[in-house]
Amino acid sequence: MTETKQPTLTILAGPTAVGKGTVAQYLRDNYPQIWFSVSATTRDPRPGEEEGTHYYFVSDEEFDAMINNHQMLEWAQVHNSYRYGTIRSKVEQALEAGRHVFLEIDLQGARQIRNQMPEANFIFLAPPSWDELVRRLKGRGTESAAEQAERLDTAKIELACEPEFDVTIINETPSQAAQEIVEYIGLQ
Ligand code: 5GP
Image (tube, rainbow, N blue to C red; front, side):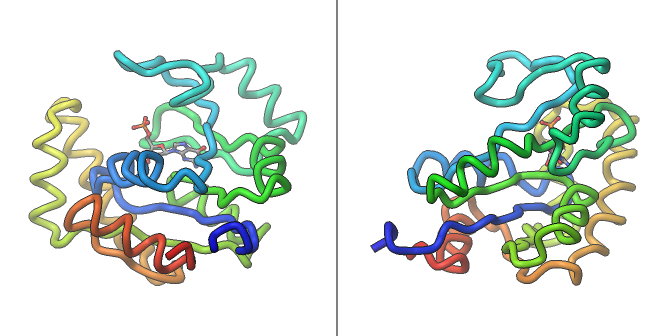
């Protein structure tokens, strides 16, 4: 029974465009015992994104205050632009409530959590191949050509971080990756 499992903290990281968001959505939809942390970010909402569901959208000043007040479990500036951070109190509350807490964060953030909570599960989501990663990045069409080139440069650096993780799961499809993730953390 899942109820008897110890609450766990799981970090889901991986290179840009690998499909972390899609796998995370699949987990949200199919595994109600998993609780995804909602991060704070200084970027503007995209169409369809809602305050408190996808992110807490905050100003630079508010983000500074959250850092200074030690409200961030970790934070990072991602793709050299906006800042993103995990809200410490919400994660702690969810763990105390016995939830399986997931953080879908970038690699800089994963390292910060590793320093504070080495007992967490660190999962690296990898693409089936480099060519497939390029195809996914170009296919989603949300970035300009210049942004795509920058993200691919970042992706090379990110892929080199794989050995820092406890396990690598290849994202062939969201359902297969999600299944392997829940098996790894012992939910199934
Ligand atoms: P997006 O702007 O596409 O929603 O997210 C961009 C990147 O920010 C993704 O790689 C995502 O994993 C990362 N990210 C989202 N929330 C956090 C967070 O709280 N902390 C860190 N370090 N990275 C985050």
